Length: 619
Image (cartoon, rainbow, N blue to C red):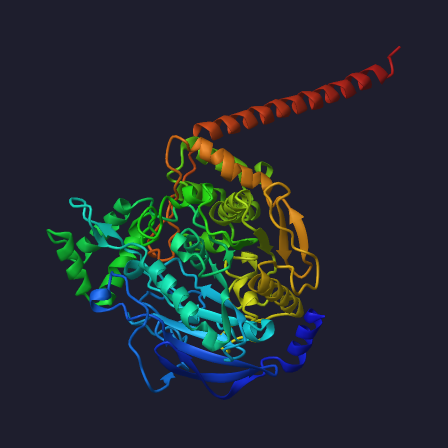
């Protein structure tokens, strides 16, 4: 019934959303004035650019900040997005944050929050959807996504926010001589925690219930959510989590210790000519630079290194190695949904230098050598063997298909399934889903990209029903059905911790138990299936670690800032294991060829003998 009602709304009242008037809500530091809009007859109060923390400027650059304490008396204008945190905007065909986007302005004074709510009644106690934006920890903003439709359709409070990025948010350093902290790592995570604490202190004034907060994100935002679950001090700040295409076990996703992070600090100090004798002097020098200078050198470091400006484990907020914490069950016990898009890896394959949709064998072999440069030789050989269609190994179509599968499985799906299995083993309510609905009228992705990374996010926010005017996607009735299904089930998680209650119009979504491994498929024909790519999951989560046991399991950086002159290393040279396989196949084909030749020769000789025998004898 709810699906039909939603479709009815779209057909007859699509995007009836306009400014109705002003709206005011109170925060702990003063009143804020936003805009009251209307979506299909439902009021939505929109507040943008609310400061939730003290600006991380001056002495707070490369340091923790605090909740906003500076009060104001007159209503603060909360009608526009606050500036994004400093970043380089790389405009690509699939970029949603373009230079003319309302959230593209930048400043170090960037810790702002956006709230979309059906009511400001302090007694409403609506569930809260707290979204952490994507962007690889070095770009993005809370203003990436607007929550009007989700707030109105599901009757929930939607919150998005900015956090520090790149060097300003994920630099870390320790003095190697004194072992004292120079730069606390994971400052972006500290910002996220402040946003969660601000919600606890203020969300009731926006109609929200601080005891029903769902933390959610995609890609780096999803990884952030997963990291927040490893922090014991976060207990009570959220009651459920939705992870979309990102976990802490993402390959090469974090520094295992502060010493590795310190090497990036040293490199940044050198590049900015702040490499002084003492670490403190270097830090003070970095604090005195324009942020544009730091951004410039940050981009060079991202280009040159195999991973930089990412989370640091086993320090401060993170009380151990992240993967080991998950293995040991040292995770906040809250309902968790793990999701991925069917072709998550396409976007990352496309970002590699020299990419073409017609993937030659040479390019495929080069991609393997690039992506798995630190794998043990046997492990790399096994990857090639697993993701080669040997009867069509020179087919660009097959090479492209299997390259996508390889990137998807390695970077997203295998880490997802690994974490989900561990969560279920430790008794945490766990659900798994796959998003399989391609936006056929996508304004950002070509058809050949399939159901690629981040394609599901507009469906979560209800864009098939109501989207901002600058969004280039167009949606079909099937897309709206999938969007409503996602919003309903995610809304149920927000309300009860169970995607099946209180509202369910369709098949039940079973818990993931690690044995039957059932998962839900979001598509126009939704289904419950089991053992998602189980052969490939066993390959990555069981065989590859054994083959890599003699050397660390790591991965080359997936660069989104590659220089135009960068060339992907190509190779046609085969390793011993593959040479053996090819030698075997070559010998087999030679044997079969010889057998066929002899058979044909025997047939010809037989025919000739028969003709001679049947020839009339001369008298």
